Amino acid sequence: MDNKMAVESSEYLEVNPGRVFLPSFYADWHDRYTNFTVHHEDVWVVTFPKSGTTWTQELVWCLMKDKDSPEAQLELMKRFPFFEYDCLIHPDMEVSGLKEDDPMRPGLSWKMVQSMAAPRTIKSHLPMQLLPRQIWDVKPKVVYVCRDPRDVCISYYYHYRKLEGYVGDLQHFIDCFLDEKAKASTPRPLHQVAEFLGKEVKEEEVSWLVHHCSFDQMSQNPAANNETFTTAPTEEAKGIKFMRTGQVGDWKNYLTEEQQKAFKTWTLKNLEGSDFPYYQDFN
Image 1 (tube, rainbow, N blue to C red):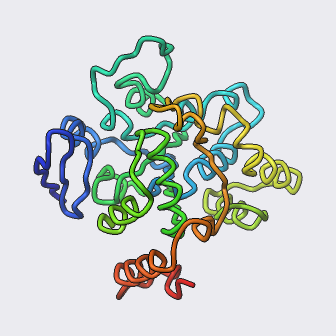
Image 2: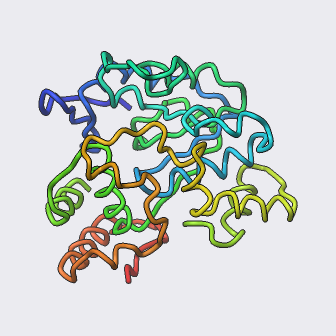
Image 3: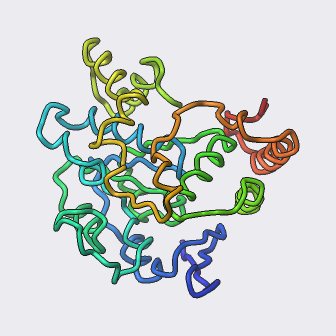
């Protein structure tokens, strides 16, 4: 698949097919990403942002690696690198104050992904057409996570306020979101992921994982809550947590009836003709 890029502004690129908007720095990384060497033993967690990515990463890492090792205390971005992180930041970003092994340093996430010991655990928010081409031939394990778009939008709204200093209102954010385009309270999702990864878990391990990956535990765990790599651009943003509520259906606390109707229309339109089994009734 040949992807075409057009400069949309000095800051963003429109990448087709799919009208994907990415920072202009992506142009320098496109070939490296699409030609990335994929290994069969890799495990990828691929999601739209704010769809339960962090929880899924922690669960997958604990299933694939030694949860009792010193490595388990490292920040999640060191254990589970963000594949395309480097295309999201300026290559000359100020790094004073960052440790030498900080994944926020330009180019370091890319080096980490390539040098990791097998099985590599890799996170990506890229759409399927921009993922490494070898994924479809080598066929590593890919854990794809979807979430109710209403909850995604509310989480993304707070995410943008925290990381980007967004000061617009919720309605404007929803308009932009719609124009653009499971949490484990029981062991069942855990068993499903473990079976997919080919891992057997004992009952005592299930209890530990459910507790360890609970929102209350992860939001307080500096090795998993992603607070160590985020910087707040405003005083207001400092009070917003990366892991905010962890609630399914939190959108009900924010969306007006009119906004809910807009989401239903948008979702059903985008699912038309699809066999995707979720959100078809959209209640």
